[in-house]
Image (cartoon, rainbow, N blue to C red; front, side, top):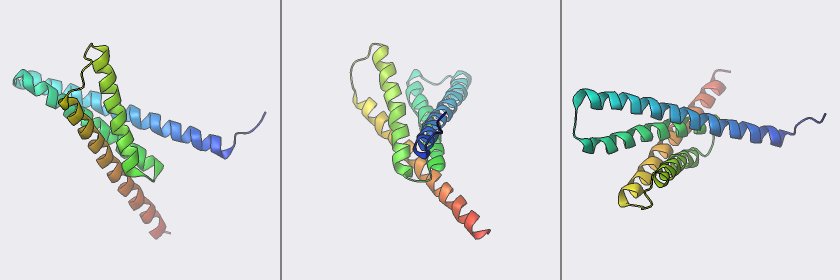
Length: 141
């Protein structure tokens, strides 16, 4: 039996980090959607509010996903977060196409920008957090 190389190990770690961050972001998104649905039922706002509230919930998921991925990777925080935001937007786009909407509207473009920015902000803050932890570990030695 042959042992795995360090490149294989690094690839598995990267894949695990990506899947873990996407799962955590999806979990936060689902939890936020549940909380905001409860808020909608309790306050009975107009139906117009459902779209921005759901976008806010997905942006929270993008933020958390970007934060976790950048924190685990320790580098390229903005890029990691941007990729997480674009991943969530692609899920949104796929769901819209499967439901029969084949139009790309201006609102979809706004969602793409918002999801990407939320992910990038999460990635940036995750990278800062990772750097702070590294710096703290070096000073305590």
